[in-house]
Length: 189
Image 1 (tube, rainbow, N blue to C red):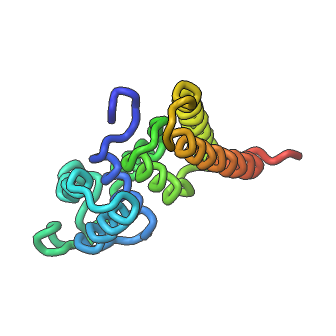
Image 2 (cartoon, one colour):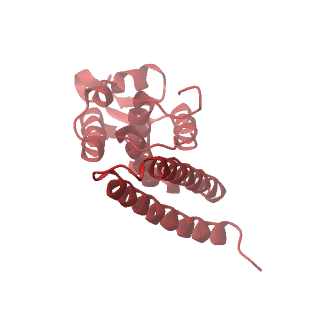
């Protein structure tokens, strides 16, 4: 993780692979798991050597996944998520999200939503709170940029208005999700 407890590209791959295995509730062949993780990530960010360079062999070596038959990549073994892997998945799912808009952040947020339901309800609330905070920080950053460059000629102001509108809609959606989760986690009697 980065110094601010946000995920690196390598950890986004780990999150995707471990979460995919957790969702399956059963062992997955090495090749199937590798393909599923690669397919999902490339559909979110496009092809990326930075994201595809991490091997499932490293997850096996670290004890996060283990073959239930065979060895691993060489014989396309069925891979299971270990208890250590489940703990790592929990850690990755609860990592912070940076308040910026880039392909890695988009992937991490998409992965969080894909696997959010694997967390306890109270932690789901915490994660959506964190995403709301990140969206509010992004609104502030873009608003400041717009305020300081709105007198320029060209199309920057219109583009920033478009971005601000998207972030406001995302924040509105996140706040609705947060309210729904809080009602489930802390029902009023």
